[in-house]
Length: 459
Image (cartoon, rainbow, N blue to C red):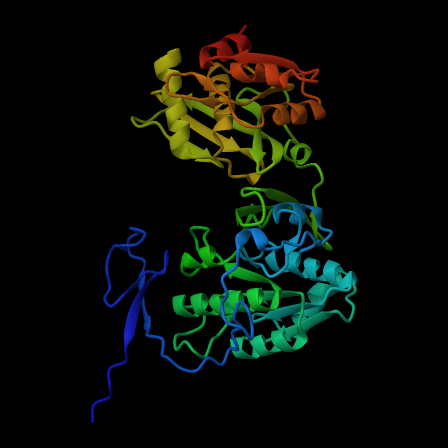
């Protein structure tokens, strides 16, 4: 007798769209070649012990004005940079996704969080599906001593993990990592689209039902996104990404989604022997080692969330030996750099069509804010003219296609940050001059267009 054909279904790895057949382009997110085939999930009794939002009661309709919100619903880790990125601490009952390259420090940072919280008598459960208890103990000994509030579980079965969470009632749970979790209700292998999505759904119900804060560690793909369906990022409350080279000493933790705080907030850490240590003054750290009186180097001030951050933009422009000049951008948008170079050619008359151009944001940061446009323009021109702009100059402003310089948010905060680090001159959009001169001793140069900024630096 022939065996019954195993039912399968196709999932989009980017957005989670389901289809009965394979398709080259996903109808949901319009991405190409993202469909994978997996066994269809069977409808069986839920062993994982998922908890409803309101255990033991039916859903009730509430009047919004009568809903009370407690102000003390956050746990403070005493790691200032992490609390800042989270919006002021860990919100109780929240689900937080932490992603990053292998070896960049995700597990180390979360183990430090466990250490700080257990020292404050908060009950914490660390669930590992990748390491043994001995391996975690060896890593924990480098961080410090842990008390009896720190619980450890090495398990991949989500049903057993759910039972342990309901039994121990921890305030914070760490899941390392979501790709190793296995839900018996889903027939596909661990790490598959179905397993990652369904396992996250169970953890979401546990977090909201029990009021437990859950951190999920997610592996990333070669494109830098969390492996699995894109819907995973929509399910969680907060998404944190580690940026930077894992071989470098510093790490940047960025919030790309946060329901309880500012998005694009960053925290800067330095990898040391005892774990990740906070960098109290990121601007000074990012500018360390700057070359003196070098052409093509400009300091700009960008806003990362609510924090002004000084970074250096470097540009190298040289004559090309090929018919098609080479352009390269590191740390910023490549197309934006090409656009700004076109503005220089069309509006200012700088002939860059036969030149190679390389633009780099130092420090390993990825910055796409329009406020750095002015810095890119001045750095390219400085390298082209081989004229240093001075070590005490800061510039910021958005550049339009007509060469005009537009206002940006937080102008006064940017000027204050530059003044704090000893800069003496700041080129700003003309419309922000009055705002920037308030209680400021730094020289403010207001410009209406790129030509005025160039006339100032070339005088």
